[in-house]
Length: 123
Image 1: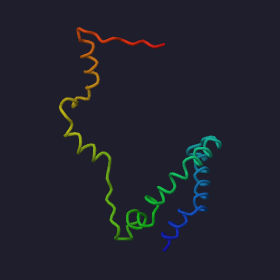
Image 2 (image 1 turned 90 degrees about the vertical axis):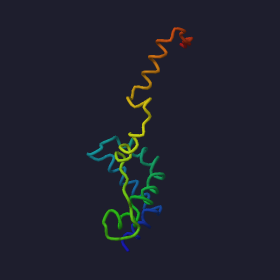
Image 3 (image 1 turned 60 degrees about the vertical axis):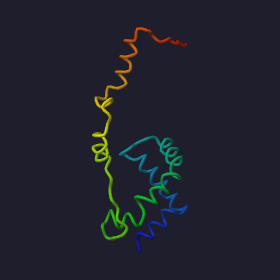
Image 4 (image 1 turned 180 degrees about the vertical axis):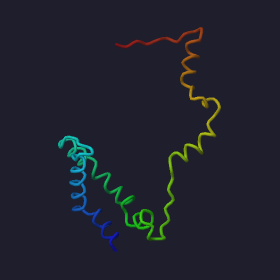
């Protein structure tokens, strides 16, 4: 019941305003410590985009109950980690670019070309 109340609060106008104020205070606090005008501008510029996304994902009642606290069995959340994806995709990298020197080798080919390209100079 408490999660649904939190969910409703996060999706309301008053909840959005309170979260904006909290984010501004957090930004101005000792951990981040930016100037008040920077914090207020940044938070108010992005809050109407970010807070609904957070409310529908990480702060949603389902996510909090099932994944964060492990109290609910449904829905099931499967975490995906960026490093696991990188580790799975790297073996499929084409041999042409496997050594991470592809762009440098293009410049070397251009430099070694007996018919140099026209150079355009702009001031």
